Length: 313
Picture 1 (cartoon, rainbow, N blue to C red):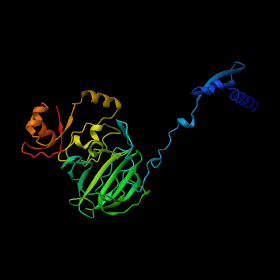
Picture 2: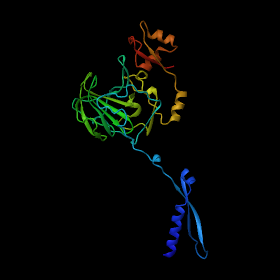
Picture 3: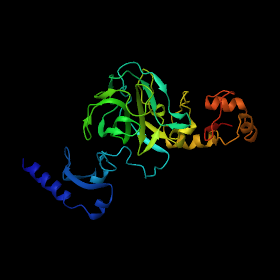
């Protein structure tokens, strides 16, 4: 017992004798003296490195209400700029379908009737239940111009999902909700041509093609643990609401850089007075068939002034 007391005193003395240089490093070096084994006499010195973990090194929880938390404004990010590419991380590998029946997409993200359609439309009957896709907090639950009764949920990675044209809102702003939780009933309010759920996905005000982030097949899969979003997937003019876009998810910044080198340089042409498909094809050195395929139109489609056409080389 006496020997143990002596050794403990020596250890405490060693701990109190570390230098300021040790604190400047990522670890603290201490000297421990312990009795020699067997027939040897004296004490043996051992160096022990103890990692120094500062408060700044620990993972801090994300406060999703810290910035641009406006419960009376549909899009509080209207005057902000987002740096591309956008990296969005997910803790889940799946999501909960916003409707409880089979998902039928009736209109996709992209250019539609001369205007940008910044979400997807999922078929439902007025009164059908609508649920949250992921855990989060309700930021907006009110009537929005054009969208009718609308709910916006901000999720814990900063992503927001919007559920529009509802007939009933069952939650209120600042409510914490879980994925799959009932939030309202589908309907036909606002500027709508029939009952359906208009679903939008956005990050800091930038609308993202929902099918780039989520697989809307019965798998209900999130495309990747980290999804990197480029401007191609936030610009409706690069997509057509009547066809499925080819999705190749970028999962790292390296993939983003490589894709920017290898991707075909697309451009958007705005139809002017007197334009024809033949004239556009000749001036841009691209076939009429390519224009039709890229924009889901036919050779007999009537072009409208201001209409945007994607021209793929």
